[in-house]
Image (cartoon, rainbow, N blue to C red; front, side, top):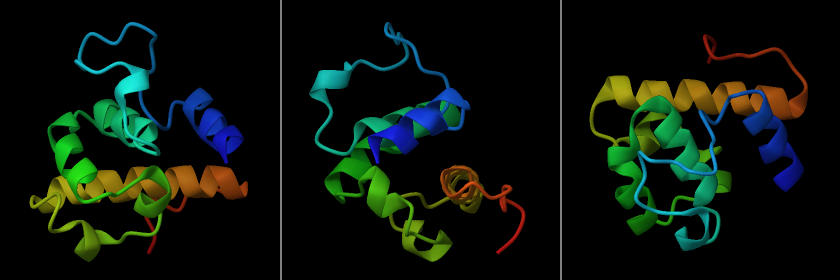
Length: 106
């Protein structure tokens, strides 16, 4: 699974990745298990403000893949922000499966 995360990361799907991320006060070692990818995803979308809520709800990268817009409602109230996250997750899932992106579909 980490290989698929690396592939998604290389394709830019998780957002910008740098070893000296100045926009996040945390380094990679301080993220709870399964949360580094969530932080990178949110950071890449400009939605890092929700990272603590994802942590407190124990929504890891793997569980995030299974959530729909309604599931995200408690963590990310604005519909536009939820849609951004869900569309990016659809792109990532499609790239991991080797299928074209279905971000605009169901």
